[in-house]
Image 1 (tube, helix red, strand yellow):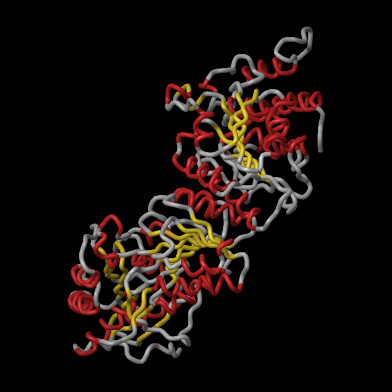
Image 2 (cartoon, rainbow over the protein chains, first blue to last red):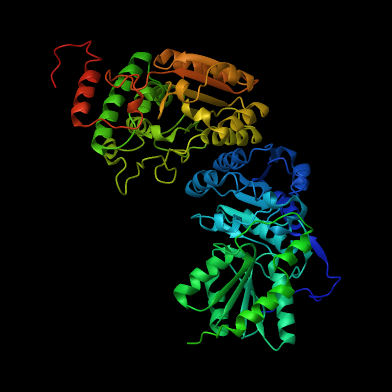
Length: 329
Length: 283
């Protein structure tokens, strides 16, 4: 499949934009297309980029103040009367603080509320560990009835927002604070539940979610110079997992590296490892935060420090592959 | 459906009897709160609310949220009496495969409006519904939210109270089951709520205090609440936990316990004889 990726992947001057900006545009467009779409925000309207929607549709925007439990439960109530609520806050607070209410009033209660977890990951930067949510992917994917989407760039975030607006399911969408490279284009396919092979290879499969997929592409380029051909799989939907695509790439490569801007335990890598263990057991290296909290720093500095850049991913992958034979059946 | 006061009192007594039978049969479930709420639920379903048992999703209906979901037994019994489902289904409470789950689940039984159990989130959902109706400019539907007093301990609860007042959700009526008990004891020993009226007023609500066992008072309070348009209204209904069964009344130990068969027999005897007022009745 031709993914119609950006032409200048790897260039220093590649266009950059924050995924939250794409969400803001997507929500505004969703609001125009579907009058049932309403927005709720817990005192973070500008930084979550809900501001454009709020200004365009003031009667359909509900300011919640710093009350994240109320944020999602009021959203559940709005959904009961036929609204399609997007409830936004920082991921550390939502789902961080209100996980039980999401479980009971949205998942078990089956209401199509869209939980927007902004400022997720280590790249939040100077605010430090309290605000760098690393456990949200794990927390959300373990809930029955929840769809989990982690867009790779701002263009994909816009598409994802529109797609989840009418999927009629409880959904979590994870956004980042920082500008990150735009590696897709308007013609790049996006469908909830689909994973995409961005680069072909057979020595190792690097599967990534969210903004880490661009780093995976850089890692693949770096590995190619060392004679390793890595397959790169972009998995924006962590739940439901595109088992067919993941299985095909895993079977082809015999060993898998996963990358996420989150704890390496129980999140995206966990989902892939669980699946492969049952269907096609093989070695899986889960890259992410190594069971520790983040800290204050510049975003790129932190990503480098914690090994979440193309260069580090390539290095870890090459080292690991040296001692890890490919599984073949 | 609008029964008169006398009819409502008779209906509430029948509902209490079925409640005792249901709890005894289930061997599990909450007694004190449901008994205390029987009059309020009877009044809601048989006089106050606009609803259609044959059409639980009717988009013109009033909505009642039960925030203290553990009291769902009284809702189930009242709904059965109102015609939402056959009365014999009440005997399936808490059993595997039953629509009558231990705590109410919206998707299992039409008419429940939401899923609840974990305390403190019902008022928020009710406020969300009221807000949606406000956005849609709907003027003839009300959202009633029954809550316990114990769940006022939850922070989420007060977030909802603030939100409702800010948004002037006058189509939202909270009904507090002020029975003064919670699991660990009397509310005023565990986590004092008084002065409760002052707290609600400070949060911007119109407060009406009533005897939660007086049908006319319940009906009048809701009627007045519907006439208050500057702010949301809360009806603080003073109730006796375990009301109707003398050996259960005022005793917090009956919060989470069902009657065994001996206790159920005794309870039914009391209910049938209106607390011993009618003598000579056979068993």
